[in-house]
Length: 219
Image (cartoon, rainbow, N blue to C red; front, side, top):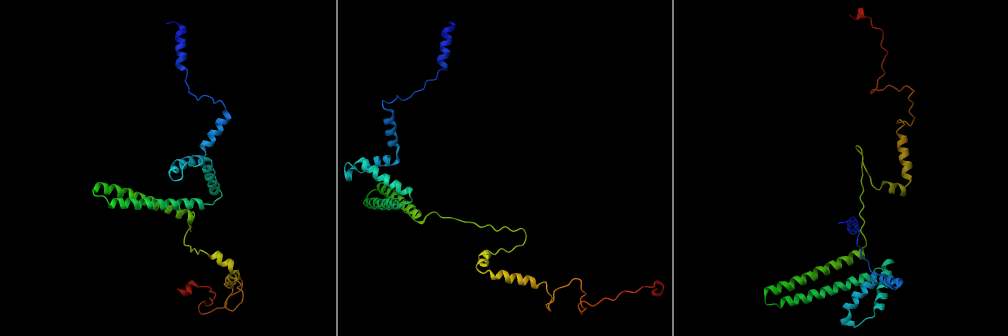
């Protein structure tokens, strides 16, 4: 094997093959059609168009898309009335399915058929309950759970709501200040003077000055 064929084989082994879609004739039109097909309202309208043929016939896709687009804008603005109505309608439809299957189960002669219809009926009942719970959650709004942590280093009494009571009655602050100031006074109303000598009493008799002690005499 010569050097040229070996080099060609090595180059072919290193070359990566990548498959791509062919370029469309009108690229702008193709991109616009792809964006239209990927819109959630268009996809929902396509599914509704197929399932609503039997009761309503061939519906107009443009009208379905416009109807769903209006519902999307309502959700964006916070209006959930259409979504609530949809859930309520689904709950009633599931209730009708449950009733139909439960009646069919009661008419079965064999146990296997009875179990099959009852299992399907209870599934419809469970979906109906879940739909109503979702509707109730939307109506009630999000629940907010707040936790309060009272952390004290050492003995401490925590009175929740004291700040609000003090804000409603500011006169209490003055009363508390007077009470603290009164502790600095003696019972007769005079201010305490740490430099003045206190009067002797039974609880605190005056101590006489100890005289000189003669050790020889005391012995």
